Image: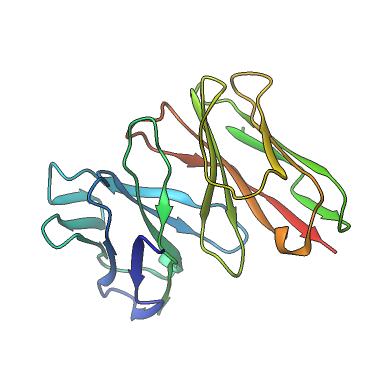
Amino acid sequence: QQQVRQSPQSLTVWEGETAILNCSYEDSTFDYFPWYHQFPGESPALLIAIRPVSNKKEDGRFTIFFNKREKKFSLHIADSQPGDSATYFCAASSGGSNAKLTFGKGTKLSVKS
Amino acid sequence: DPKIIQKPKYLVAVTGSEKILICEQYLGHNAMYWYRQSAKKPLEFMFSYSYQKLMDNQTASSRFQPQSSKKNHLDLQITALKPDDSATYFCASSQGTGLYEQYFGPGTRLTVL
C-alpha cells in the first residue's frame, strides 16, 4: 500500500520557470512533510519541510503549499536553474516514537537552459 | 568533514553470504535509521533506533539485524544474502524520533551476485 503518492514521475521546465511537484497522502496521522532532493550517485538531502500548523513554508526559491483538507502538498521551485535538475522526493511522518519517513516514488526534474 | 559515515561505499557479495554495513554519525543525534533504495522500490524505511533502543522495524525478514554498540553507531548485519537484497542502503539520523529533520549518510551500494 503506497501511502504517499507523487506526481508527475518526470518534469521538464525551462530555466526561469516555476516547477511544481505534487504529493498526496492517505494517513491522517501524518503531521510532518519534508521534501528531499537527490542528485545521481548521491544521498537524499533535506530541502524544506512543513508541519500542518501552517499551509505554506518558504525558503528562498522553494515553497511548500499544504492543503490538510485535501491531504495534498506541493513543492514550487521558482526561477528554476539547471543546477536544480535532480530527483525530488516528498515524504511524510507521524512523528512521536515512530519517526518513519514514508517516501513518494520521486519526480525527476530536468531544467533546460 | 562528513557528519555521517557509511562503510564501505560499495560492496559486492555472493548469494548466501553475510555482510555488515557500518554507520557512524557525528551530529550528536539520538536517533538513527536505516533506509533502502533500489530500482524497483522507492526509499523504504527499515529500522529506527533511539538511544540505542529499537523503536520500529519494518523489514519482513529476520535476515536484517541492526546492531548498536554505541549511541552514534548503527550497523546493519544482513545474513543469507539474496540477489533481491541488491540496493543502496542509507543510514540517517535525527535529533530525536519526534518531528525532527532526518539527515542521510552517503550510502552503501550492495550488489549480491
